[in-house]
Length: 187
Ligand SMILES: CC(C)(COP(=O)(O)OP(=O)(O)OC[C@H]1O[C@@H](n2cnc3c(N)ncnc32)[C@H](O)[C@@H]1OP(=O)(O)O)[C@@H](O)C(=O)NCCC(=O)NCCS
Image 1 (tube, rainbow, N blue to C red):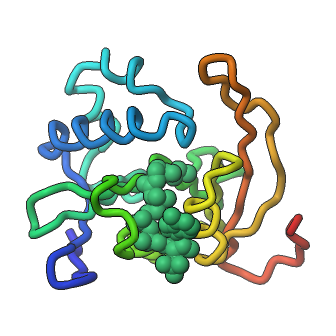
Image 2 (image 1 turned 30 degrees about the vertical axis):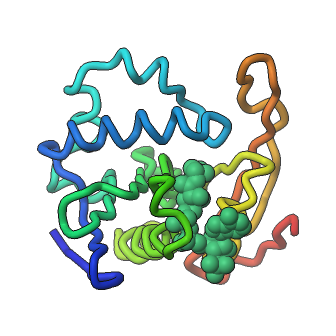
């Protein structure tokens, strides 16, 4: 799979089923570190078998579902981002960005931006895909700023999208369009 160097020690490539163990450890740590950023919880996913994580990664030859990993020194997984294209014919112009996280100790080094840019560049090459959508929790300033600076625009907010220990969290829906579809974003 493609490898693009982002700095002298970070490289980005698609995860493979053989990365499942490292992906599981990374994902559970990310869910535990910032529960409000995600719809899934560490408690729930911690119960899943390794095969569940391998299936989430999917097969290497799938063009419409993949997870990218950022590796430090080619070994340590320090960031992930997922892309999933709608299968239904009337919605297969849409890809969803999901499961974005960078390891806490690696924040602020441009890894998140590199992952989003790489995902957009790969999604743009998938025949028929016109836009990428995502949700980000209200109050996740780092995530929201990152997405806005990568060309995502808000199109709505879902109140009480998640409930964590009784606390309601609103999710902001955002879209990045590859064409110049005539549309006015919310802000
Ligand atoms: C959001 C997240 C992925 C950003 O990753 P990162 O590698 O630290 O981000 P980068 O270093 O690439 O920064 C990219 C941009 O994000 C924004 N950003 C990052 N950290 C920020 C912070 N602490 N405060 C405000 N903006 C911030 C900035 O716009 C930054 O661009 P700039 O450096 O030109 O100002 C990371 O903070 C994270 O994993 N958070 C927890 C999980 C999460 O929120 N996932 C997203 C779910 S939708």
